[in-house]
Amino acid sequence: MEKELTYGATSRINHWVIAIAMMGMLGFGLYLEFGGLAREAKGPLIGIHKAIGVLILIFGLWRVTWRLLKGFPAPASNMPAWQDMASKFAHWMLLAGVVVMPVSGLVGSLFGGRAVSVFGLFTLPAQAKIEWLQSFSGGVHGLFGKALAVIVVIHFAAALKHHFIDKDATLSRMLRSTSKGDRATKG
Ligand code: HEM
Ligand code: HEM
Image (cartoon, rainbow, N blue to C red; front, top):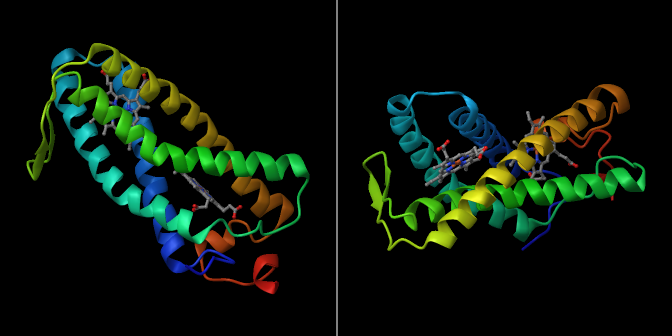
């Protein structure tokens, strides 16, 4: 498949749909964990968290596959080597999170002996309980979730820095079709 030199319409839609969904779910999950909710209030909310998570996994698998096939476009501007490395690391972690978060959530639930219903559309059946797998997945879900929340904040701050301080095309080429100041499209 042809590699992307800059973000095409499909990549931009994929990025923003999943970005909004993931930020919502990170906030939702942290609220469930630390919001001090009463048990009765929490139960139904966890059900909604799980159902949305499964839908994100379905769209996310497509989004991640698309990026793997298309490759990452070259950075929109020259930057110090450490920034280049940090952004590559962040993008891979964000991409991994799109799969790791819902899969770890699912595995933890299903192998904890709980079925997952997706808004009554379909149900993933409970599995025989495997205690170590349930707690391992739960650990991954909590740890990766917190790490991702930090990375998203840095990712967001970096996008603003590129836009308002460096004044390069990093953010604008993710927002609209553009070749202005985009080194990648100039070859
Ligand atoms: C889009 C993907 C998802 C994201 C970004 C996400 C994020 C989070 C976060 C950040 C937490 C708080 C973890 C902690 O601080 O320990 C959490 C909790 C949790 N998540 Fe997810 N999650 C996702 C999908 C799922 C799925 C698909 C399931 C299950 C099918 C699930 C089940 C749970 C459960 C059971 C909790 C614990 C709630 C509690 O008892 O406090 N999550 N999630
Ligand atoms: C408001 C929040 C966000 C802003 C302003 C933002 C902005 C951007 C920008 C400008 C780029 C292009 C970077 C470059 O070309 O070097 C980018 C790439 C990327 N962003 Fe975000 N982003 C946000 C939230 C997120 C979230 C929550 C995720 C989590 C999945 C995410 C995942 C990615 C990934 C994986 C890339 C690499 C290219 C791709 O596959 O789309 N972003 N983001």
